[in-house]
Image 1 (cartoon, rainbow, N blue to C red):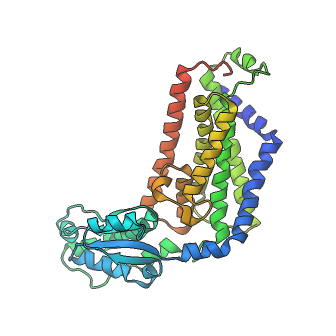
Image 2: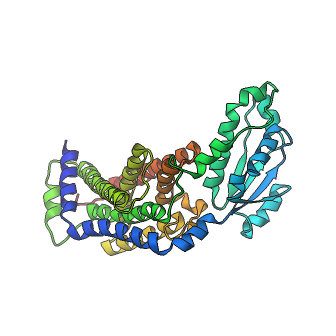
Image 3: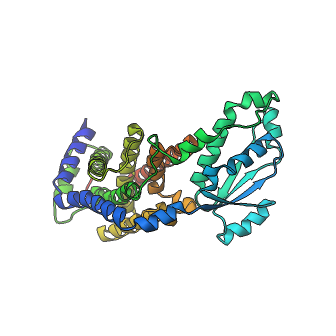
Length: 374
């Protein structure tokens, strides 16, 4: 009950911070409009360029042949520029020189292992665009599993229709391709929500010009109870901001938010909690407000760039794994445009992992420190 009381008053306090409220609302709405209408030509060229992929297929069995057929389909060839390699050593140089983004590798015993009821893997590795390759492979595996019983019995169909699996990768249920404004509505919202870390800083910050920390310390309530309540209140405040921005961009700009609403709202809530937690953690590690604020601003720029907030070409899948913006983007776009369940599950685990890591570290630091403002 005390946690909820603390959360309520923290929420109300943040609502009264008109300048911060206006910044969090206006900035993502304004940036979505500007970027969504100003960089359309560059974005369209960037997203329509074919992705360079290295391909090694050692499997001469049915699975290898079917995967070859998949990569020769019109839908795949319109998106991928595929170069065949003999072995993994050859792909290393191509990856280092930037000639290819990722590699698909089918081992020699793939079909044989599957026929014998043994597990086997299609290996994917590279520097970027792995989520797209995982989606394509996930569609292939789903289609393959649908006829796996027939294949295992030796009666392999001459041709497997992968069209439905491929379509769900690239198009929405209404057959819409994501527009520029759809892309930036999500990325800029996440980019601004990171600024919510400032609320986390203020939770820990001690104001020497006020006796508030003395009054709080005199309360018959543990410091963890108060801090948890404040974190909850600030997180719900950020979550409310994200919903308002989402509704505005949907009904005013016509942005496509037509995915599973539980996944979208869950992602926004988890991201809001992570943002506030980052602020708390940074302030526990930094000596003063200005240092903590500088770190938050640097994190906002770093997380935004590696997740593609400037352009899809700037997104870095390898580095982006440590960015909550990247995984939030995967989950939002995944439910709207049909990413594979494997990719979305991985990003869900990462977001939950961020929450556990951030607040676990905060708990340890607060337990060892003496913060007389809480």
